[in-house]
Length: 65
Image 1: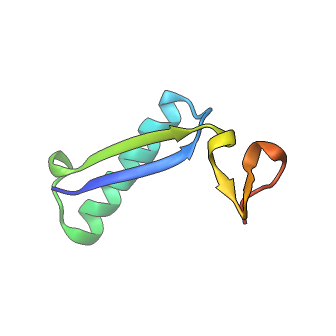
Image 2: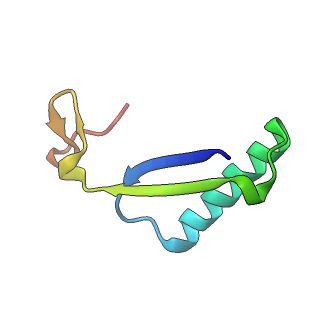
Image 3: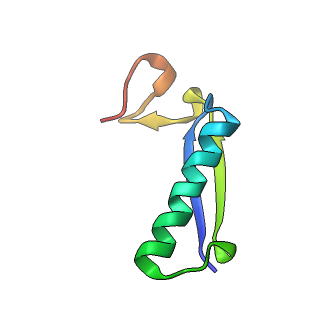
């Protein structure tokens, strides 16, 4: 049973996260032959102030590359 963890910045709608989870589930079925009922997708939303790249939080204006 795969568990896929997706960490992303806050602000995505429930509909968007559902679509992402469905697409991940489809890929695991198509590529690895895993039944959709066996796949779990967990989203963790992170505030830009808690996401730090190159020593700078994203809310300081730095965009990830």
